[in-house]
Length: 410
Image (cartoon, rainbow, N blue to C red; front, side, top):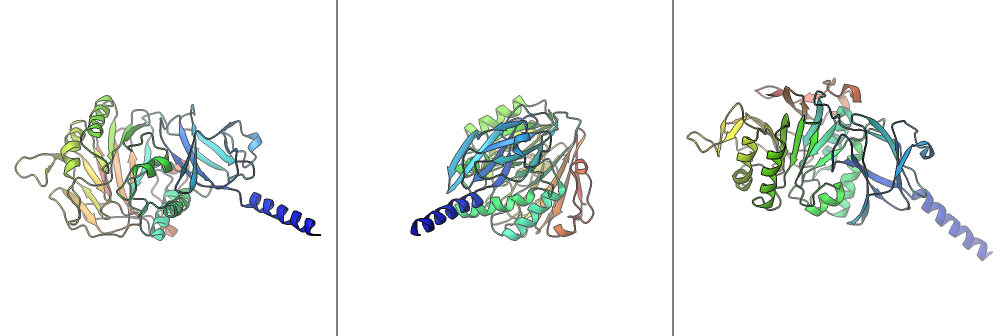
């Protein structure tokens, strides 16, 4: 009788393992050409021999029907979680791929992604913002609106969590699942390092192409050259040398956009001026035709007029207005406590103390920037992948004195 009970207990134990076995905390990231590659990441809770099964045809969760499968390219045991990544290569541009993740005893939901077009005549839709570190509820609202707006990808400019603990990262990744649309479309993230995480955090969680978290990628052929810089490591020297080389090698890009965490000239008095960024990056960015810079950190909302770095008479903190200059946007309120913008400049366009992110359309002739307030997400109509450039009913766009729309023309 005891033996039978023991066998029953053992069976129940293994059944429970099978039931609870799962993969979760899914994410898509870029570490190579976004038209032909994607990195699929997840946390392996238990189970083994996981593979990504993928195809241009939707076979639901029937893994045997998918035409392709691939084992993890990289596995990071980090802060109590097993982060797995499969780097898919040789994909078709501007193509939907369906996929599932299956291991010995579990199968994920069916997801899909869209590779970026390699045609510069095709527009890009981008959401940019950051600083989600404090409050989960507004962070979740913002993530849900990402799913409704269906952008090509998100530029997240740092400060994911408060202390970077394993528990906080688990919560953040759980919340990130809300960026997946109801029909399973996952939105890739272009990850930037903030001052509340380490380079190891970003490298291990997002599988970015450089351990120092500065890199660049081209989107839409030569439509957009996107540069990620790191304000949390040494700025002069290797990083700035790399930036100058990267800019010189990508002059064929129609648009170049840069993103980093701490602003050159924050719009909040209790934040230090970003003199290191200004001294090393402002002139190279301007002289190489960068038109848009995404910043975070201060937990406020700002946009500037186009400016150039200058020490001429009348400059304000090293900048003067110039129609051929750079527009700076930010400064990060994706769930962090909102602060008043109390350090405005003569070249500041508009500021406010609101929770928001930026919604950016890019085409060959112009860049359009709107600021989206996300707290009314329930009222916003959901876009589809083929209508991602429509302005949905119910969306709450910031409408300051200089208008809802910023347009940067070529």
